[in-house]
Length: 250
Ligand SMILES: NC(=O)c1ccc[n+]([C@@H]2O[C@H](COP(=O)([O-])OP(=O)(O)OC[C@H]3O[C@@H](n4cnc5c(N)ncnc54)[C@H](OP(=O)(O)O)[C@@H]3O)[C@@H](O)[C@H]2O)c1
Image (tube, rainbow, N blue to C red; front, side, top):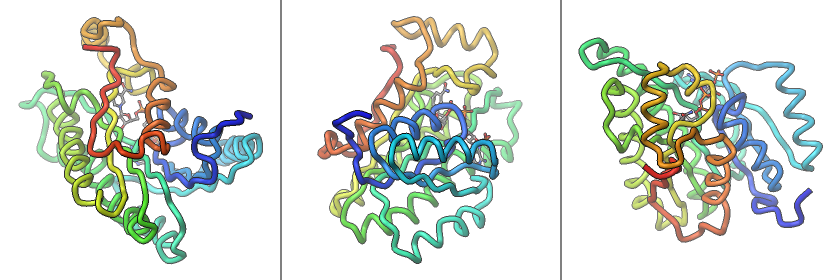
């Protein structure tokens, strides 16, 4: 176990921890001493056993919460007990999200609404609830997993890119509104990262994106998680309202 644990005694709430970038963030946070509210969609007994051993191995507490980001009531019901108990939450990582690729004329407005519900409105709802606790504490760090797709326009990504652009705008605005309460709000904009999300992408689009990166490869989930750890830690205590690209240079 590392002698210099960056998140010792902090409490982090992370969404989408059951796979991909979210799982790697949770593991790195636990290794760095954070107690964790591990949020994922559906209770899974095998995964609960993994959470238990991650907690034991790192001498931290990990408790799970279950909700579908498309279901506003489930989110509220899951988080209400934390608000009622005035639980401490130092770090919120809005990680869970869905990809969507299709050209504008082939995309129904309902599909765009569905993507916004998961990638944008649910993140705002969770942030609104959790920052109530952070305001009481007069401290906190919120990290939104955006995407370079929310900055660089790309054909065929109208729904996904717009939802991430909205999340970036919200990040900057909330940083201004919540900064006076010592709550920092930042975003990470990963390039293509080696998870099931990237694996599902059409091969040609994937190759084009890899070629755009000066390092000519995908990011690893660990490379995204390390930046999340930095933003969550006191090492970033005066960084607010920023969008950090982690894309290998484009
Ligand atoms: N991979 C990339 O290339 C890339 C690039 C830029 C940004 N990002 C962003 O990074 C974040 C993590 O992506 P990833 O690559 O780790 O994706 P991933 O491997 O596909 O994992 C997505 C996570 O989000 C959860 N999720 C999706 N829809 C949900 C819903 N309706 N309710 C609850 N949970 C839901 C998934 O849970 P289930 O297992 O239940 O579906 C899973 O835990 C996302 O916000 C993504 O947009 C990824």
